[in-house]
Length: 351
Image (cartoon, rainbow, N blue to C red; front, side, top):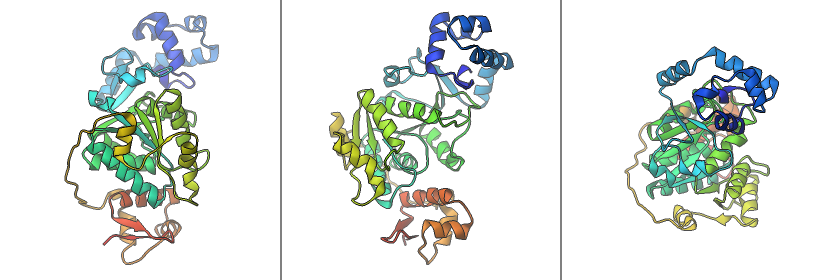
């Protein structure tokens, strides 16, 4: 509940928790007590106002109705690696389930606008890692995040997605269907209580958890200043293995991974190389993968590409939807090998 109050983060929640010893006692604190504990007056007022709106029992009942679990940093189910990072969330909200096997996890992050090469490499490595018994962790964003989650699940593996907003909403909304799939084959996790909006400042905090949950961070594609570099930096600070897939020459999305490699990150081109870099043994799993039906997120794009090749901009104009929505659709279709991109940047069906 406290983490749904604007400006209240893990540091302050942890300080109050240590002050009172129990979460229930924190919930009973008055404004004067909060201020005495070092909370700014304006923030203390917001906290008291929030706590008066809903009791801890009512909050728990609301979580149960949403099928959302909550765990504290003191619970045995709380991921061990996350306990070791600086200022871990005192509460995690979870849809799905975290397992002991998720300790064997690797983060895969990258641009929201991947090239066909980036999609191909992310799909390949995430799938290989899943078949080797590795949980793939990412942020459920468009682009590389979505590719990593889907490829992992298609290979029969587990995947964990961290959100930068309340657990009750998937952002972007176009990935809601993907989020439901992740819940069935892993977990969607947030440190933010239901109702917390997707604020800009939440996403670097989210990235620290993506890195924190994992033994290593793989950057696939990203331009200079890419958000994936924030995740990589958190990984470095946390003592995790930082890896990167080499980018294609002349591709602006190669700047982030190639820069990391020049700075000393481990270059990887296969799941086996990731396993080797982490000093793990391979635990091969097998699953027969069938294409099945066209994913609904890409159905309109797929239908429009009947007998023609079109660019993202052309598809956007033809379908009268935003470029971002088209990019999400073609990324999902590429992942499922329904479409492919030619040298001129046009997409066509794989017949």
